[in-house]
Length: 490
Image (tube, rainbow, N blue to C red; front, side, top):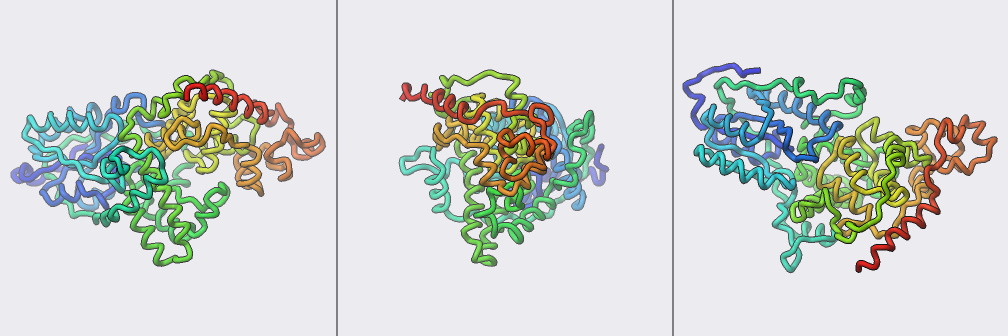
């Protein structure tokens, strides 16, 4: 829908374009602040269907993107600006908009995906031919990837020394406040958000997500405040308990830039002063923000990470190919309740507790011996927080092929994981109601329950709930054997 023309005679003076990417907010956006100081601002978001190739935004993330853009549009409207929506090739769209409006500069936040550098270079060259500058600003990480290196000047490949090096650096800059924006007064055609079809319709599998999530800047700030005020003190000991609200659930907000990591970092530092007894938990929480930084550090320096094993030996790993087992895993029908609970939580909410993510990932790669890429692709489509760096890095970590990876012999026992981290069974019973009436003794291993116990709980294995698709002991031995084939490559 076109914005209303006002004073066309002044519309061409000091015009800048702010190109929103994965930074869908107004606060702590240095590039937007610079654009605001330069004069009239045209905020634009470009939906480029070809950007990222196989890593184009997944289905669940599209839902978050839709609502984040709605929120951003509302925030901009409060200052009299309209969010311009364009679709098509990014370079062509921004070049045409600059030519139409007489913009002298395009501002944006820097990106680090494998295709980002080439895109920014091409855009800069195209705009330069028009006499338009491209100015990039930091906005999505605490530290630029080039600024953190080993003593020898090489990229880190192990998380702990990487995070120590980050913490030896000067503190991240204080968040930049929301700038005062001056609208552009000319007429610009904008596409309609609903026409982009980002929301599921047939069926609407996200019908109740509005009750679970509140995408956008306001929702992000509320989630951050609630976590730091009420839950962070329990994070250190409680973050592994999936039935308890001890994790932040900030990852989707960070993924789409509804919240910046600098805002999180400084808010957490302030909480240390208010909650001195929670300093240990807060440091643990910040280390998870550090893991996100580490993933982007790796992605920037090793851009093939989403598609290729970081450890080249794993190019020879004897992965299995079993579509039926993959489908059972995806649908939460493996016969292992804690695994099935996680996969169903993912499908129904677009999210999965981090401890359970490790369990289901280990099960796929080590119990089923299915390629970590299959899990990476499923998470990419189903997770609201599907982030190319964290997704690839974490899957390779669990699968054993990544930087600082989990040892090949570390194979999560899904029974023991369920009994340890969901001891009372609240999480499992919520997502796997078929076994909810089993006593705790058998909840995570229903196949060991006597017939009368199964009958009393209404469980008919192979009918109301599947038998295990693999035996844990047998699967573990097969995994160790498969991983052992790589030893000859050392």
